[in-house]
Length: 325
Image 1: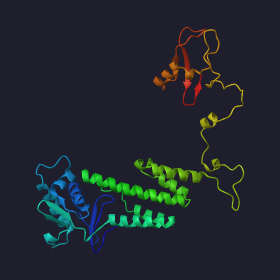
Image 2: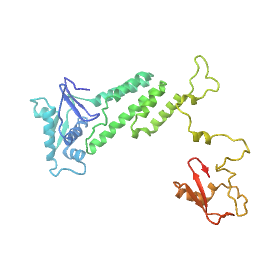
Image 3: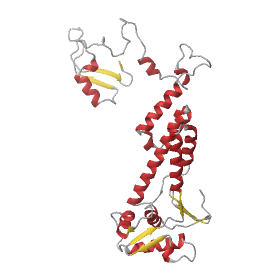
Image 4: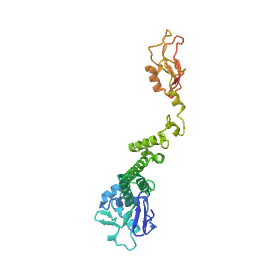
């Protein structure tokens, strides 16, 4: 949002920005903005100089100690206060060893986010998922990328994670509403746009599975049950992979195994040419160990007795498809 003509407006759901009377304010270098965030996001509480130093500089405080704070706070006062504001009426108050940011005349985008989020949760609880989905969308639109982008220090990092968790909760609420409404395609589109860190969230995965199930379910005929023999396969944009179709195909009982296929009939022949004790070559310990060590090699050498060869037998394999040749 672009500022408020009646009060100071500050946004933290992205790069830190501020407006006074609709005009953007220059907040200075990154370190100064980090000091501002560490004061602003304390809900008006008093912050000691030591806590402020720890939150901004962490384990690497400046050599000048608390004296460096005034070099950041005083320029922030001149930027954020109206012209002619007395020191005791500044948005950043101070005392012996402390600072405090006064929020009385400040509008934060966090307040807008909290209002929209609470409204969406109440609307969903009242049984109106369509309106709740729209309100969740409006709340998510307040985010302009990563909260407190480019700000350093332990305090900014902790607040960034807290705000990202709020965004994750809103996305979860919107996905839930879309699934409840049967808008499975929109839900899957939202899930596909999730950041990498959110895609494997357990609740997100559960909603995505519900959306996939609903999207792939056969569409019933108007006024009647689904057609007999209808399948969800026709809803998918592509066929199953060829290897999958082959591996799941059925063979009649007693039919010989396919050539090269490793099956129960492919047993190791002993020195007399007789079959072994009914075990597949893949079940032998030596071969399994060699597969584990040489799974990327197209050839596996298995030492065993053979009536016509005095050296190792070479077996060419394609383990990904289950073939032995």
